[in-house]
Image: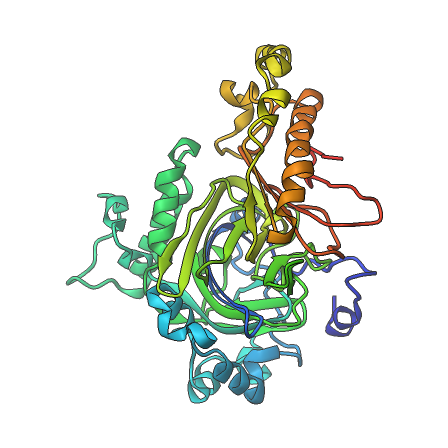
Length: 485
Protein backbone atom coordinates (compact mmCIF):
# COMPACT_ATOMS: atom_id res chain seq x y z
CA UNK A 1 0.00 0.00 0.00
CA UNK A 2 1.51 3.35 -1.02
CA UNK A 3 1.23 6.61 0.85
CA UNK A 4 -1.41 8.13 -1.44
CA UNK A 5 -3.66 5.11 -1.11
CA UNK A 6 -3.26 5.03 2.67
CA UNK A 7 -4.02 8.72 3.10
CA UNK A 8 -7.16 8.42 0.96
CA UNK A 9 -8.70 5.68 3.10
CA UNK A 10 -11.85 6.42 5.04
CA UNK A 11 -11.96 4.26 8.22
CA UNK A 12 -15.75 4.46 8.23
CA UNK A 13 -16.02 3.09 4.69
CA UNK A 14 -12.83 1.19 3.82
CA UNK A 15 -11.05 -1.78 5.32
CA UNK A 16 -8.53 -0.84 7.99
CA UNK A 17 -4.98 -1.10 6.59
CA UNK A 18 -2.81 -3.62 8.42
CA UNK A 19 0.65 -2.08 8.38
CA UNK A 20 2.47 -4.04 11.11
CA UNK A 21 5.03 -6.51 9.77
CA UNK A 22 4.00 -9.33 12.08
CA UNK A 23 5.54 -11.80 9.66
CA UNK A 24 8.91 -10.72 11.04
CA UNK A 25 8.31 -9.83 14.69
CA UNK A 26 5.45 -10.17 17.18
CA UNK A 27 4.68 -8.18 20.31
CA UNK A 28 4.21 -10.67 23.14
CA UNK A 29 3.47 -8.25 26.00
CA UNK A 30 2.68 -4.56 26.51
CA UNK A 31 3.49 -2.60 29.68
CA UNK A 32 1.53 0.63 29.44
CA UNK A 33 1.72 3.74 31.63
CA UNK A 34 -1.05 6.28 30.96
CA UNK A 35 -1.65 9.71 32.50
CA UNK A 36 -5.08 11.19 31.76
CA UNK A 37 -5.36 14.96 31.33
CA UNK A 38 -8.99 16.10 31.17
CA UNK A 39 -8.05 19.77 30.70
CA UNK A 40 -6.00 19.19 27.54
CA UNK A 41 -7.94 16.10 26.43
CA UNK A 42 -4.75 14.11 25.93
CA UNK A 43 -3.19 11.02 27.46
CA UNK A 44 0.56 11.14 28.09
CA UNK A 45 2.03 7.69 27.90
CA UNK A 46 4.98 5.38 27.78
CA UNK A 47 4.59 1.89 26.42
CA UNK A 48 7.16 -0.90 26.65
CA UNK A 49 6.98 -3.65 24.04
CA UNK A 50 8.39 -7.14 24.55
CA UNK A 51 9.16 -8.56 21.11
CA UNK A 52 9.93 -11.94 19.64
CA UNK A 53 10.97 -12.89 16.13
CA UNK A 54 8.05 -14.61 14.42
CA UNK A 55 8.55 -18.38 14.39
CA UNK A 56 7.54 -18.50 10.73
CA UNK A 57 10.25 -15.95 9.91
CA UNK A 58 12.81 -17.93 11.92
CA UNK A 59 12.11 -21.03 9.84
CA UNK A 60 12.37 -19.13 6.56
CA UNK A 61 15.54 -17.28 7.52
CA UNK A 62 17.19 -20.44 8.80
CA UNK A 63 16.42 -22.34 5.59
CA UNK A 64 17.30 -19.51 3.20
CA UNK A 65 20.31 -18.36 5.15
CA UNK A 66 19.57 -14.70 4.57
CA UNK A 67 19.26 -12.02 7.16
CA UNK A 68 17.05 -9.37 5.67
CA UNK A 69 13.31 -9.27 6.15
CA UNK A 70 11.41 -8.36 2.96
CA UNK A 71 9.40 -5.74 4.85
CA UNK A 72 12.55 -3.75 5.64
CA UNK A 73 13.39 -2.31 2.26
CA UNK A 74 12.27 1.20 1.30
CA UNK A 75 10.03 1.63 4.37
CA UNK A 76 11.87 4.80 5.29
CA UNK A 77 11.94 6.17 1.74
CA UNK A 78 8.59 7.96 1.79
CA UNK A 79 8.14 11.70 1.77
CA UNK A 80 5.60 11.63 4.60
CA UNK A 81 7.81 11.10 7.64
CA UNK A 82 5.32 12.62 10.05
CA UNK A 83 6.35 14.12 13.36
CA UNK A 84 9.90 12.85 13.45
CA UNK A 85 11.05 14.65 10.26
CA UNK A 86 9.20 17.97 10.49
CA UNK A 87 11.17 20.41 12.68
CA UNK A 88 8.13 22.63 13.18
CA UNK A 89 5.94 19.75 14.26
CA UNK A 90 8.71 18.39 16.45
CA UNK A 91 9.09 21.70 18.21
CA UNK A 92 5.38 22.06 18.77
CA UNK A 93 5.10 18.54 20.11
CA UNK A 94 8.06 18.85 22.45
CA UNK A 95 6.83 22.13 23.88
CA UNK A 96 3.31 20.80 24.36
CA UNK A 97 4.21 17.82 26.50
CA UNK A 98 4.73 19.58 29.79
CA UNK A 99 3.59 18.39 33.20
CA UNK A 100 -0.02 17.37 33.31
CA UNK A 101 -1.61 20.81 33.37
CA UNK A 102 -2.86 21.86 36.78
CA UNK A 103 -1.90 18.50 38.31
CA UNK A 104 1.81 18.91 37.61
CA UNK A 105 2.78 19.85 41.14
CA UNK A 106 1.26 16.61 42.40
CA UNK A 107 2.59 14.36 39.67
CA UNK A 108 4.84 11.97 41.59
CA UNK A 109 7.60 9.78 40.16
CA UNK A 110 5.61 7.65 37.72
CA UNK A 111 3.88 10.58 36.02
CA UNK A 112 7.14 12.48 35.92
CA UNK A 113 8.63 9.52 34.09
CA UNK A 114 5.96 9.87 31.42
CA UNK A 115 7.06 13.42 30.76
CA UNK A 116 10.80 12.79 31.10
CA UNK A 117 10.84 11.48 27.51
CA UNK A 118 10.87 14.98 26.02
CA UNK A 119 13.85 16.11 23.98
CA UNK A 120 14.81 19.60 22.99
CA UNK A 121 14.51 20.65 19.36
CA UNK A 122 18.27 20.39 18.92
CA UNK A 123 18.38 16.85 20.20
CA UNK A 124 15.48 15.83 17.98
CA UNK A 125 16.95 17.42 14.88
CA UNK A 126 20.37 15.84 15.34
CA UNK A 127 19.54 12.47 16.80
CA UNK A 128 16.13 11.20 15.69
CA UNK A 129 15.39 11.91 12.08
CA UNK A 130 13.03 10.31 9.64
CA UNK A 131 14.16 12.19 6.54
CA UNK A 132 15.19 10.47 3.33
CA UNK A 133 18.86 11.36 3.77
CA UNK A 134 19.10 9.50 7.07
CA UNK A 135 16.83 6.52 6.47
CA UNK A 136 16.98 5.47 2.84
CA UNK A 137 19.66 2.79 2.81
CA UNK A 138 17.03 0.04 2.71
CA UNK A 139 19.36 -2.48 4.38
CA UNK A 140 18.47 -2.26 8.07
CA UNK A 141 15.47 -4.13 9.42
CA UNK A 142 12.46 -1.89 10.11
CA UNK A 143 9.83 -2.75 12.72
CA UNK A 144 6.43 -1.44 11.65
CA UNK A 145 3.64 -0.87 14.19
CA UNK A 146 0.05 0.18 13.55
CA UNK A 147 -0.78 3.64 14.89
CA UNK A 148 -2.68 6.78 13.97
CA UNK A 149 -2.92 10.30 15.39
CA UNK A 150 -0.16 9.86 17.98
CA UNK A 151 2.62 12.33 18.80
CA UNK A 152 5.65 10.07 19.24
CA UNK A 153 8.48 11.77 21.10
CA UNK A 154 11.08 9.09 21.65
CA UNK A 155 11.81 5.43 20.95
CA UNK A 156 14.60 3.69 22.83
CA UNK A 157 15.98 0.25 23.51
CA UNK A 158 15.59 -0.91 27.12
CA UNK A 159 18.58 -2.31 29.00
CA UNK A 160 16.94 -5.31 30.67
CA UNK A 161 20.27 -6.36 32.19
CA UNK A 162 19.96 -3.35 34.52
CA UNK A 163 16.44 -4.29 35.67
CA UNK A 164 16.02 -4.82 39.41
CA UNK A 165 15.85 -8.50 40.36
CA UNK A 166 16.80 -9.71 36.90
CA UNK A 167 19.92 -11.41 38.25
CA UNK A 168 17.69 -14.37 39.11
CA UNK A 169 17.42 -15.06 35.38
CA UNK A 170 21.16 -14.82 34.76
CA UNK A 171 22.03 -18.44 34.04
CA UNK A 172 25.47 -19.91 34.57
CA UNK A 173 25.83 -20.57 30.84
CA UNK A 174 25.22 -16.93 29.91
CA UNK A 175 28.21 -14.92 28.68
CA UNK A 176 30.04 -13.00 31.39
CA UNK A 177 31.16 -9.37 31.06
CA UNK A 178 34.82 -8.67 30.43
CA UNK A 179 36.29 -6.43 33.13
CA UNK A 180 32.81 -5.86 34.45
CA UNK A 181 31.58 -4.35 31.18
CA UNK A 182 29.57 -5.99 28.40
CA UNK A 183 30.57 -5.40 24.82
CA UNK A 184 27.69 -4.37 22.57
CA UNK A 185 27.46 -7.82 21.01
CA UNK A 186 27.68 -9.57 24.36
CA UNK A 187 25.04 -7.29 25.86
CA UNK A 188 22.67 -8.03 22.99
CA UNK A 189 23.14 -11.79 23.43
CA UNK A 190 22.49 -11.64 27.18
CA UNK A 191 19.42 -9.43 26.75
CA UNK A 192 17.95 -11.81 24.19
CA UNK A 193 18.54 -14.76 26.51
CA UNK A 194 16.83 -12.97 29.41
CA UNK A 195 13.79 -12.01 27.34
CA UNK A 196 13.55 -15.56 25.95
CA UNK A 197 13.53 -16.92 29.50
CA UNK A 198 10.74 -14.52 30.52
CA UNK A 199 8.64 -15.32 27.46
CA UNK A 200 9.22 -19.03 28.00
CA UNK A 201 7.83 -19.18 31.54
CA UNK A 202 4.94 -21.63 31.87
CA UNK A 203 1.34 -20.39 32.03
CA UNK A 204 1.05 -21.26 35.72
CA UNK A 205 4.01 -18.94 36.40
CA UNK A 206 2.20 -15.89 35.04
CA UNK A 207 2.67 -13.89 38.24
CA UNK A 208 6.43 -14.34 38.07
CA UNK A 209 6.37 -13.52 34.37
CA UNK A 210 4.41 -10.29 34.92
CA UNK A 211 6.79 -9.36 37.73
CA UNK A 212 9.74 -9.58 35.34
CA UNK A 213 7.85 -7.71 32.64
CA UNK A 214 7.21 -4.86 35.05
CA UNK A 215 10.78 -4.75 36.36
CA UNK A 216 12.22 -4.77 32.85
CA UNK A 217 9.88 -1.97 31.80
CA UNK A 218 11.35 0.20 34.57
CA UNK A 219 14.96 -0.41 33.49
CA UNK A 220 16.92 2.48 31.94
CA UNK A 221 17.31 2.91 28.22
CA UNK A 222 20.48 1.98 26.38
CA UNK A 223 20.20 3.92 23.15
CA UNK A 224 17.73 5.94 21.11
CA UNK A 225 16.33 4.35 17.97
CA UNK A 226 15.42 6.03 14.70
CA UNK A 227 11.72 6.25 14.03
CA UNK A 228 9.27 7.70 11.57
CA UNK A 229 5.50 8.16 11.68
CA UNK A 230 3.01 8.45 8.86
CA UNK A 231 -0.78 8.36 8.73
CA UNK A 232 -1.15 4.69 9.64
CA UNK A 233 2.13 3.45 11.11
CA UNK A 234 5.18 3.92 13.27
CA UNK A 235 8.44 2.62 11.76
CA UNK A 236 11.46 1.91 13.96
CA UNK A 237 14.98 0.78 13.16
CA UNK A 238 18.37 0.40 14.78
CA UNK A 239 21.30 1.30 12.58
CA UNK A 240 23.32 -1.72 11.55
CA UNK A 241 20.65 -4.28 12.53
CA UNK A 242 19.50 -6.14 9.43
CA UNK A 243 17.49 -9.06 10.81
CA UNK A 244 14.54 -9.41 13.19
CA UNK A 245 16.45 -11.88 15.34
CA UNK A 246 19.11 -9.20 16.02
CA UNK A 247 16.60 -6.40 16.57
CA UNK A 248 16.15 -5.11 20.17
CA UNK A 249 13.69 -7.27 22.07
CA UNK A 250 12.41 -4.60 24.48
CA UNK A 251 11.47 -1.11 23.30
CA UNK A 252 10.14 1.92 25.15
CA UNK A 253 8.01 4.43 23.23
CA UNK A 254 7.15 7.82 24.71
CA UNK A 255 4.17 9.55 23.13
CA UNK A 256 0.91 11.38 23.70
CA UNK A 257 -2.52 11.08 22.16
CA UNK A 258 -4.19 13.88 20.23
CA UNK A 259 -7.50 15.45 21.28
CA UNK A 260 -8.92 14.59 17.86
CA UNK A 261 -7.74 10.98 17.99
CA UNK A 262 -10.79 8.81 17.43
CA UNK A 263 -9.79 5.78 19.53
CA UNK A 264 -11.04 7.54 22.66
CA UNK A 265 -14.02 9.81 23.21
CA UNK A 266 -13.68 12.90 25.41
CA UNK A 267 -17.11 14.00 26.60
CA UNK A 268 -19.29 14.61 29.66
CA UNK A 269 -21.49 12.07 31.38
CA UNK A 270 -25.20 12.51 32.03
CA UNK A 271 -24.37 14.38 35.26
CA UNK A 272 -22.18 16.88 33.36
CA UNK A 273 -18.82 15.61 34.61
CA UNK A 274 -15.83 14.96 32.29
CA UNK A 275 -15.05 11.45 31.14
CA UNK A 276 -13.08 9.61 28.47
CA UNK A 277 -13.44 6.08 27.19
CA UNK A 278 -12.45 3.88 24.29
CA UNK A 279 -15.32 4.25 21.88
CA UNK A 280 -14.86 1.24 19.66
CA UNK A 281 -13.52 3.38 16.83
CA UNK A 282 -13.19 2.07 13.27
CA UNK A 283 -9.43 2.51 13.74
CA UNK A 284 -9.54 0.40 16.93
CA UNK A 285 -6.90 1.49 19.47
CA UNK A 286 -4.35 2.87 17.03
CA UNK A 287 -4.86 6.42 18.32
CA UNK A 288 -4.38 5.20 21.90
CA UNK A 289 -1.12 3.24 21.66
CA UNK A 290 1.21 1.81 18.96
CA UNK A 291 0.34 -1.85 18.46
CA UNK A 292 0.04 -4.73 16.03
CA UNK A 293 -3.38 -5.25 14.46
CA UNK A 294 -3.14 -8.34 12.20
CA UNK A 295 -5.09 -11.37 13.48
CA UNK A 296 -2.02 -13.36 14.50
CA UNK A 297 -0.83 -10.53 16.79
CA UNK A 298 -2.10 -11.66 20.19
CA UNK A 299 -0.46 -10.41 23.38
CA UNK A 300 -0.92 -9.94 27.10
CA UNK A 301 -0.68 -6.59 28.82
CA UNK A 302 -0.48 -4.73 32.11
CA UNK A 303 -1.36 -1.08 32.51
CA UNK A 304 -0.88 1.62 35.11
CA UNK A 305 -3.26 4.57 34.79
CA UNK A 306 -2.88 7.93 36.51
CA UNK A 307 -6.05 10.00 36.83
CA UNK A 308 -7.34 12.84 39.04
CA UNK A 309 -8.14 11.80 42.57
CA UNK A 310 -11.83 11.05 42.96
CA UNK A 311 -12.20 9.74 39.43
CA UNK A 312 -12.75 6.09 38.53
CA UNK A 313 -10.67 4.00 36.11
CA UNK A 314 -12.21 0.90 34.54
CA UNK A 315 -10.38 -1.40 32.15
CA UNK A 316 -10.80 -4.76 30.46
CA UNK A 317 -8.38 -6.36 32.92
CA UNK A 318 -8.78 -9.57 34.85
CA UNK A 319 -8.50 -7.90 38.23
CA UNK A 320 -10.78 -5.44 40.01
CA UNK A 321 -8.29 -2.67 40.69
CA UNK A 322 -8.26 -0.42 43.74
CA UNK A 323 -6.63 3.03 43.54
CA UNK A 324 -3.40 4.08 45.21
CA UNK A 325 -3.51 7.81 45.98
CA UNK A 326 -0.58 10.16 45.47
CA UNK A 327 -1.46 13.78 46.16
CA UNK A 328 -4.03 14.98 43.61
CA UNK A 329 -3.67 11.81 41.53
CA UNK A 330 -4.76 8.22 41.85
CA UNK A 331 -3.08 5.23 40.24
CA UNK A 332 -4.93 2.14 39.02
CA UNK A 333 -3.27 -1.08 37.87
CA UNK A 334 -4.84 -3.73 35.62
CA UNK A 335 -3.50 -6.78 33.79
CA UNK A 336 -4.51 -9.69 31.57
CA UNK A 337 -3.01 -13.16 31.27
CA UNK A 338 -5.13 -14.21 28.27
CA UNK A 339 -3.59 -13.56 24.86
CA UNK A 340 -5.82 -10.88 23.33
CA UNK A 341 -5.90 -8.68 20.20
CA UNK A 342 -4.83 -5.10 20.83
CA UNK A 343 -8.29 -3.95 19.74
CA UNK A 344 -9.84 -5.46 22.90
CA UNK A 345 -7.87 -3.13 25.20
CA UNK A 346 -10.56 -0.99 26.81
CA UNK A 347 -10.38 1.93 29.22
CA UNK A 348 -12.91 4.32 30.76
CA UNK A 349 -12.04 7.18 33.12
CA UNK A 350 -14.69 9.38 34.72
CA UNK A 351 -16.60 10.29 37.85
CA UNK A 352 -19.10 7.45 37.89
CA UNK A 353 -20.40 5.72 41.01
CA UNK A 354 -20.79 2.02 41.65
CA UNK A 355 -24.37 0.78 41.74
CA UNK A 356 -25.02 -1.41 44.77
CA UNK A 357 -27.63 -4.20 44.59
CA UNK A 358 -30.87 -4.13 46.43
CA UNK A 359 -30.62 -6.53 49.33
CA UNK A 360 -33.45 -8.81 48.19
CA UNK A 361 -32.89 -9.46 44.52
CA UNK A 362 -29.84 -11.74 44.72
CA UNK A 363 -31.66 -14.44 46.64
CA UNK A 364 -34.57 -14.20 44.20
CA UNK A 365 -32.48 -14.44 41.05
CA UNK A 366 -29.52 -16.52 42.10
CA UNK A 367 -31.02 -18.79 44.71
CA UNK A 368 -29.58 -22.28 45.26
CA UNK A 369 -32.17 -23.91 42.98
CA UNK A 370 -31.69 -21.58 40.05
CA UNK A 371 -28.26 -22.84 39.04
CA UNK A 372 -27.93 -26.21 40.69
CA UNK A 373 -29.02 -28.31 37.73
CA UNK A 374 -27.07 -26.36 35.14
CA UNK A 375 -23.97 -26.25 37.31
CA UNK A 376 -24.02 -30.00 37.71
CA UNK A 377 -24.48 -30.51 33.99
CA UNK A 378 -21.72 -28.12 32.97
CA UNK A 379 -19.17 -29.34 35.49
CA UNK A 380 -19.65 -32.95 34.51
CA UNK A 381 -19.31 -32.28 30.79
CA UNK A 382 -15.88 -33.09 29.42
CA UNK A 383 -14.56 -30.27 27.28
CA UNK A 384 -12.20 -30.79 24.34
CA UNK A 385 -8.69 -29.52 24.78
CA UNK A 386 -8.25 -25.87 23.83
CA UNK A 387 -6.21 -25.01 20.78
CA UNK A 388 -4.99 -21.61 21.95
CA UNK A 389 -1.55 -20.66 23.27
CA UNK A 390 -0.93 -21.45 26.91
CA UNK A 391 -2.46 -19.16 29.54
CA UNK A 392 -4.49 -19.77 32.74
CA UNK A 393 -7.62 -20.98 30.93
CA UNK A 394 -10.96 -21.09 32.79
CA UNK A 395 -12.34 -23.87 30.61
CA UNK A 396 -10.22 -26.41 32.47
CA UNK A 397 -11.02 -25.04 35.91
CA UNK A 398 -13.79 -27.09 37.65
CA UNK A 399 -14.81 -24.09 39.77
CA UNK A 400 -15.14 -21.88 36.68
CA UNK A 401 -17.10 -24.57 34.84
CA UNK A 402 -19.71 -24.55 37.61
CA UNK A 403 -19.89 -20.73 37.89
CA UNK A 404 -23.18 -19.76 36.32
CA UNK A 405 -22.93 -16.06 37.12
CA UNK A 406 -19.48 -14.49 37.28
CA UNK A 407 -18.83 -11.53 39.60
CA UNK A 408 -19.95 -8.26 38.04
CA UNK A 409 -20.18 -4.59 38.88
CA UNK A 410 -22.35 -1.80 37.48
CA UNK A 411 -21.24 1.84 37.26
CA UNK A 412 -23.32 4.86 36.29
CA UNK A 413 -23.47 8.66 36.57
CA UNK A 414 -24.84 9.74 39.92
CA UNK A 415 -28.10 10.91 38.33
CA UNK A 416 -28.78 7.38 37.01
CA UNK A 417 -27.68 5.43 40.07
CA UNK A 418 -31.15 4.65 41.42
CA UNK A 419 -32.60 3.69 38.04
CA UNK A 420 -29.62 1.43 37.32
CA UNK A 421 -30.09 -0.23 40.70
CA UNK A 422 -33.72 -0.97 39.96
CA UNK A 423 -33.47 -2.08 36.33
CA UNK A 424 -29.96 -2.83 35.08
CA UNK A 425 -28.31 -4.52 38.03
CA UNK A 426 -30.82 -7.40 38.23
CA UNK A 427 -30.84 -7.71 34.44
CA UNK A 428 -27.09 -8.35 34.25
CA UNK A 429 -27.33 -11.33 36.58
CA UNK A 430 -30.12 -12.88 34.51
CA UNK A 431 -28.20 -12.33 31.27
CA UNK A 432 -24.99 -13.86 32.61
CA UNK A 433 -26.88 -16.88 33.89
CA UNK A 434 -28.69 -17.30 30.56
CA UNK A 435 -25.41 -17.02 28.65
CA UNK A 436 -23.92 -19.72 30.87
CA UNK A 437 -26.87 -22.06 30.29
CA UNK A 438 -26.61 -21.67 26.52
CA UNK A 439 -22.88 -21.26 25.91
CA UNK A 440 -21.23 -22.87 28.91
CA UNK A 441 -18.24 -21.67 30.91
CA UNK A 442 -17.66 -17.93 30.99
CA UNK A 443 -14.27 -17.19 29.40
CA UNK A 444 -13.61 -14.33 31.84
CA UNK A 445 -13.63 -14.25 35.61
CA UNK A 446 -15.52 -10.96 35.99
CA UNK A 447 -17.27 -8.18 34.08
CA UNK A 448 -17.98 -4.48 34.61
CA UNK A 449 -20.99 -2.69 33.10
CA UNK A 450 -20.74 1.07 32.54
CA UNK A 451 -23.50 3.51 31.59
CA UNK A 452 -22.10 6.09 29.16
CA UNK A 453 -23.59 8.96 27.19
CA UNK A 454 -25.82 8.47 24.17
CA UNK A 455 -24.27 7.97 20.69
CA UNK A 456 -21.82 5.35 21.84
CA UNK A 457 -21.01 3.80 18.44
CA UNK A 458 -20.01 0.23 19.21
CA UNK A 459 -20.27 -2.88 21.31
CA UNK A 460 -18.58 -3.48 24.62
CA UNK A 461 -15.12 -5.00 24.73
CA UNK A 462 -14.05 -8.09 26.68
CA UNK A 463 -14.59 -7.54 30.42
CA UNK A 464 -16.00 -4.00 30.13
CA UNK A 465 -19.50 -3.51 28.71
CA UNK A 466 -20.56 0.02 27.80
CA UNK A 467 -24.31 0.67 27.73
CA UNK A 468 -26.19 3.63 26.32
CA UNK A 469 -29.42 4.47 24.57
CA UNK A 470 -29.53 3.27 20.99
CA UNK A 471 -32.08 2.64 18.29
CA UNK A 472 -32.17 -1.06 19.12
CA UNK A 473 -32.11 -0.68 22.89
CA UNK A 474 -29.77 -3.68 23.11
CA UNK A 475 -26.76 -4.35 25.31
CA UNK A 476 -24.08 -6.59 23.84
CA UNK A 477 -21.16 -8.50 25.27
CA UNK A 478 -18.60 -8.23 22.52
CA UNK A 479 -16.96 -11.64 22.60
CA UNK A 480 -17.90 -14.69 20.61
CA UNK A 481 -18.37 -16.79 23.71
CA UNK A 482 -21.09 -14.66 25.34
CA UNK A 483 -23.78 -12.23 24.27
CA UNK A 484 -26.26 -10.29 26.32
CA UNK A 485 -29.42 -9.11 24.64
